[in-house]
Structure formats: structure tokens, C-alpha cells
Amino acid sequence: MNSLKVTILMVAMLALFAAVGYLIGGQGGMLIALVIAMGLNFFSYWFSDKLVLKMYKAREISEADHPRLFTAVRRVSQKAMIPMPRVYIVPSKAPNAFATGRNPENAAVAATEGLLELLNQDELEGVMAHEIAHVRNRDMLIGTVAATLAGAIGIIASIARWGAIFGGFSRDDRGGGIGLLVAAIIAPLMAILIQTAISRQREYKADSTSGEITGKPMALASALKKLHTAPVRLNLDQRPATAHLMIANPLSGRGMASLFSTHPPVEKRIENLQKLARNSAHGSYVR
Image 1: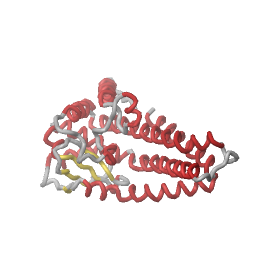
Image 2: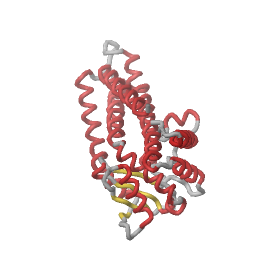
Image 3: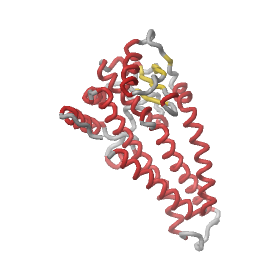
Image 4: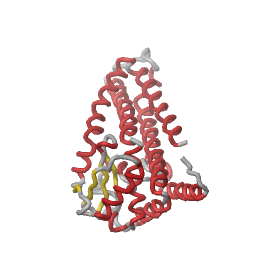
């Protein structure tokens, strides 16, 4: 069901891009915007592991450096049947963790000092399994495709706005004034909503996959509860640009703001893990 939702959202994003691109720039404009967006996001995708790890001053560890974390990552990666990723510790008391890398062969997982102090071994394995799930499910690639389409829509929107300012469009152009309004204002907003909806579905999927890998979905539920009730702020150095990578997003909003959040509400995540635990007790998983 989760994969179907993501597929529908990706098709919706592609349809939005095609409609807005054709409305403003025709096929040529669509191609230019897509190439620019691909170029910008390719760099982020290919070098994400090095950029993010350097940003947080993460230190790579061996088993001798931190046996508890290294063992947890090795155990869950073996159960997930993917290559052992590189393991890092982030020097921060903010309890959080993230995975990065363009594919399972070039992946890295990182945990903060605060997370290691806060969680017991089962909870730590649950969190590491969540991050390993992102690697196995190739969520970095899915996120990059979504970001590329959203970026291309944003570029087209900028063209539409500048065209309106300098009179580059007339009422005889495709869509006229209404088309210009849709492309310049409404389309970018819709793209962001779709992009964050895709991200939330991938978080649900990673939670579910974590429960399947460890066989202990309630360990992850317990970890999420601890992370969101910890006295130390979750955000690492107030960097919203990378908050979507974290297992616990400190920027999640309430009400209408939740539509723009890259993470689902923690209460809903815990509820889903509880359902998963009940189903696993009866010999089946909810996917």
C-alpha cells in the first residue's frame, strides 16, 4: 500500500511538471528546466554522504572504537541483507540519527552521542534498522527524483514570475492570465506538498521495514517516544535543510503546517508500529 501511494504521488508530480511546463515554456521550456534541476540535484545525490557527514563533523568508527553501535549496525545490515555501511558518530548531544549515500554499496549511517546515551540496545537497533531501511529501499534516489521534479517546477514558476514582471507573456499565450497564476504561485506550492507527502510515506515504510528487520517494532516505537520527549532539542545545529534526513524531525508542524512536514506525526508512527507488532504476533506484517 505504501509503495502504491508513493507511485501515485510520483505520477502526480510528473503530471504537474508536464502540465505547468507545457503551459509556460512548451516542450523546450520543460526540457531546459528539467536539465537544470537534474544538474543541481545530481551533485547533491552523488556527493550526499561526504557533504552531510562533513557538515556535522561526523567521525567514522570501527568496532574497537564503539562496539555497541558498530555491532547494532552490523547485525541489522546482515538481517537486511545489504552490505555493511560505514558507521559514524556525530559529536552532538541532540539525540538523532540519519543515513546517507546514493546506494547500498556507498552508504553510511550516523548516530549522535546524545542518541547513544539515551537508548538501550534494542531501541538502538530499531533506529539503525530504520536507517538501514532507507538505504535498502533506495529512498535517497526516490527523494532525489522528487526533488528534481519539484525543482524543475520551481524553475518554471520563476520564469513565469519574471515573464509577468517584464511583460514577456500575453493573454494569447497558453493558459493566459490564469495559466500564469497557476504556474507562478499554485504549482510550486503543490509540488512542495507532493514532495513532502512522498517523504512522509517513505518514513512510514522505513518504520515498517525496521520492524520486519529486527522483529521488534515496539523497540523502535519506544525509541521514537524517547527521542520526541528528550529534554535536549532534536535539531542538529538548527539546519532545516538536512532535517528531512533525521529519524526524528524537529521541524514537524501541527495542523496545516503538518502538510509541509517531511515526517509524519510521531503519534501516528508509533500507532502504526503498534499495529505492526500486533500483526506480527499473528504471523503477518502490514506493508
